[in-house]
Length: 130
Image 1: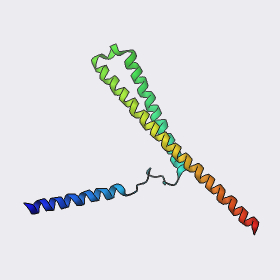
Image 2: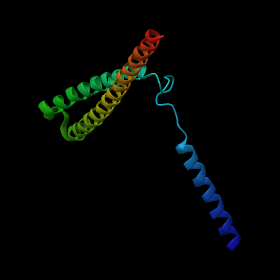
Image 3: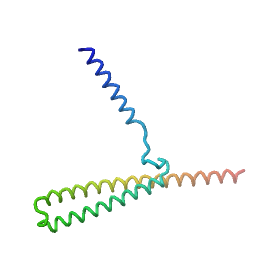
């Protein structure tokens, strides 16, 4: 019995360590886009935010219909209204997250641009001194 418990503890420990290893490996942020291509990531996240905005507006129209004409939908309408509210909250969160990521990558693009400008000007100064 002790051997079985020891073996099962051993297996569980290695399985857990394997999961930690998988979690710690770096995956690309967006499949198909290089993680260093910040301009492409800005476009991607802005497109994501626009899609979420469209979904949010669609669910807002549904919610407005349920609220303005609740008598058409009966008791089931309350559940659908609640569902529409939940969808709106989720789409707002997703949209804000995408906008934050786009803003981060926009800053990275600006930072890289500034760094390239500094490198170019220092190279020009070195060439001038020669």
